Length: 363
Image (cartoon, rainbow, N blue to C red):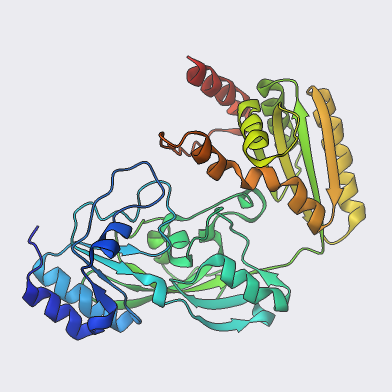
């Protein structure tokens, strides 16, 4: 791959202006890595575009010079997605962070790709709406779409891609295309937007997205359930799902992780294999029925302790430990790196893979 010459840099400055281009050491270093264990790789230049038209011009020029281009925004990936492994040019999308319109009556919003989902949800609260996917970091919408991010609410609400109606994309040739439509269901031709959902930035640069929203739940119920062993906890997960219960979130933590959470954060959870559950609904009666079924199933699987609470504050209190996991592990093992692996198995095999994974780690 050719190195960028001063002439190349001047050509790019002519597109975005000198104030939105950097070859400074600190910026190159910042954009050389994410939060994963993968080795860093520095770009030659970082550019902050403000529009699809600017990105189009940049890609046309980069394509003509065979300059690698890597989209970058939150830098929160745990799998190396935004690392510019071939050097070249990084497109930092964070200046493209506007909410373009909100149509509450249609449960839809149009945003630029550099907007993070936390800011979006704060804005949507006043309308009684929210964007459900929550990958656990302050991820941007463009990055979430490019990775089809899921997160803790995926069991009930699905992945990011399930909420994408429409998107604007700049292709490597510089062509700006609009994919999808505002219709929630369509059978009129190929669903081309699906090619870009989960494509990890390899097919083009996502610049705008129209999202389908959900109404904010009126009631929350959370539960933290401790078990005598990891196999019992894993079996209860399979049985909970097989009964048809649809928790908004369901997470598992082994006893060693719970012990670290307690040690580094001053909590006092029972140091056992633990499930964290969240249910959402329009009324407390239905949620209490769900809780009764949870208690029944978990009791049959060796539940040692169950604590539950109604309301948003109780949900936040009971789920505090789950949100501390990533940072706690980094504190506990400062000289080590975290390897994050997503595993998909039939629910009937979930207990088996949990036990097998634990055995491999112990060996």
